[in-house]
Image 1 (cartoon, rainbow, N blue to C red):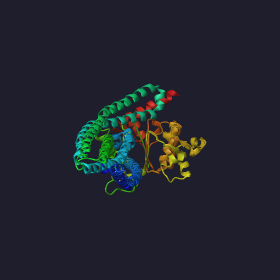
Image 2: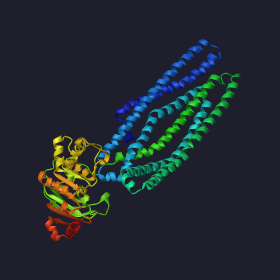
Image 3: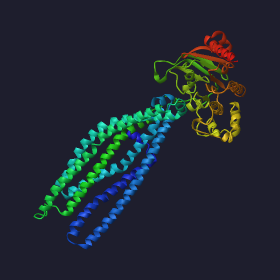
Image 4: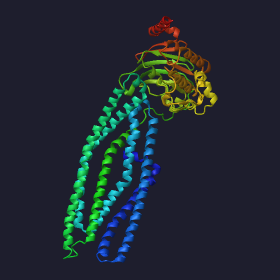
Length: 582
């Protein structure tokens, strides 16, 4: 997992190398300083040698300044490496998400992916910065401090060596108990993001039903769960500090006790004793070592937190789209003919099929209406055409070729879809329409807008085609949004056009004008029109009637009126309803 994540370092390898290099240089100088201080005391101050004191003092100042410089450079490159690593990690995750099929996205959920791209990456970024700097600094400082301490007095230095196993056992116990809790924390974060996203997306519904108090309560409950989990984890992690303090103060007492006895003994036997300068440097090495052990414990805690995040990020990077090109993909869609051969389909490999045994043959350029009750899998049927999902059984052919044999981009460039949930992005009308064709001219845009019956209302805006669309198209009506999405699809000049209940928010007159424009302007494009209104499909060449995921009828509207009970009932109920209204 770590190897996969570190692949995102890429161009920041140099910064990741320079940061620990400067850290080691800083540590070496910091380890030299207590030794110089010991010499200053023993050979300068105790002997009243002023020239020695000045020389040593100057060397100490230079060492401090150089150490400070190395420390600043280490911080600079560590920050650069960590920020760059996080940038690449987000990019790699986002790039992989773009290749996901709908089923892959359904597996994670939108809120979970947002959490992983933000909170989890931030946790890993902080951990990486600590690793490239402090994780090198602390072990280096501990090793060099131990070496210098053994040079001064090996018996006292053993006290420092003895604390390491005590800390190691404590850290392992803390880690093993805290890590599972942090895994739960980030899963709960997913729920929190989902609650916030739903609330903001449906704020108009929330306010219209006066459900603010309910939403507040729902948010408070999720937020409280995160608080409780963090508190539970903190109650375990908090043992880190008393453990460190116990080790530090115990070591200080022991070293002070034995060193003071050696200092007293040095008056009788200087060889076996210890000088004041040596005691000062030994104490400095003790503090350096113990303080860096404390820093290691902090890194250890960060790793506990970030490990859960790393695992969640790795899941996204490892996820492979279940829709991918074959070895020799077909790079051209010859025409818009569509054929379903024994097609059955279920979501996420379930045994329950939402489409069963579909056999339909559609010629290029035909207009096909699709009707059926709610849950009859009308959307599922058309989503198999551009391979938003793959058929579980059987096969779907476009232009006489199995859709799984096409290059995915080639296929989707020739199939334009206007989904039930019409999505517009922040930007001008022109920018939104050019999603269909980035190279489209202004004349092309106006032409398709006229076909989609959108030109009239656009011209009434003060800025016309440069009118800014808010996020989600919140500043245009549902019908206007639908017509803009239809125009965007037409800019692709597709061989197949799919309208998934995408004229439900426009009046019947506008709906009729759109269908008339399609018939006259794009006669060679195969058109699928999913609709609830019978008037939207009565001019179609053929109509598919779906019932419970099965084809209940397929033929011209006139044929279905005679032979299909469902079509006839829908027709009569809507026509009768219209006559009653009149």
